[in-house]
Amino acid sequence: MLRPIQTEDHDELSLITMNLPTLDRNLFPALLQVLEQIETKPKTRIVILTGRLHVFSAGAELREVIGLETPVAVDRFTSIPLRIVELLSRWNKVSVAAINGHCLGGALEIALACDLRFCVDSLPGNADGAFLGFPETRLGLVPGIGGNYLATRVIGFAHALELILTSRLINAEQALRIGLVHRVFAREGFGERSMSEAREIVSELRTPICWIRKAVFGSTYEEDLAKAQRSEVEIFRESCLRPETKESIRQALLINRNRFQRAS
Image 1 (tube, rainbow, N blue to C red):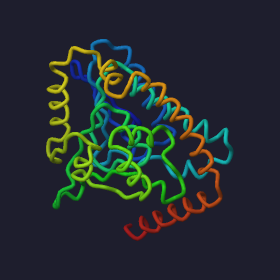
Image 2: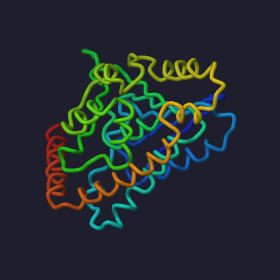
Image 3: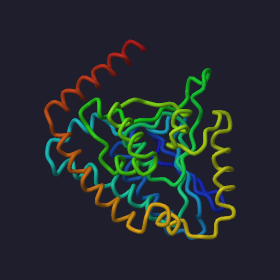
Image 4: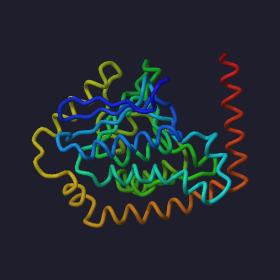
């Protein structure tokens, strides 16, 4: 059976691969456990998070979201993802999201918590290119683990509002243009190029990355993120429990199932 998370150590660099196409209840605890283990390794300076094959992650598993019936269940569902975003935002490691394919919803929130984002190209001829966005708003949901705040910090209010409001998916080149990602690489050799680029960026770094984050984002960055997460969870909880949202998710699952059956 395929493990949800796979890790590889390359000297000062740790590579984490998410082996599942969605962020489900099996993946989240495994990812948090691996991150907490890496946090204790002083030798590790760089952590790269990527996906398996040609998908970074399609976000939360909708079949799990639709099953959330109480505020307590929603809070339990978001508790580990919130801790993952919080850890990535404060630890003294340089974290890189190597976006090797579609990066949607909660997966984009986690990528935004990373210090750097590299993305595989979406140029014509690359059928497996990456698309990024928050499609959950077309279902009646909102980003719920810090993504609204982080998107605003990373790409500015106007771009963040448009991305979330429209639920539009953008390709790698558009993401680079608005500052959502830092580098775009070709599919061939993407993993090796991401590791090489990360090493080069960090090679001359002597200042702790946690100090740099506070200098760039402000001394109250961690407190501001925690406050934003609390607010976002409240809104996500309310949106998740609405009957209209559940009906939208049911329709989306039905459409996806019909597409799969036709493809089979």
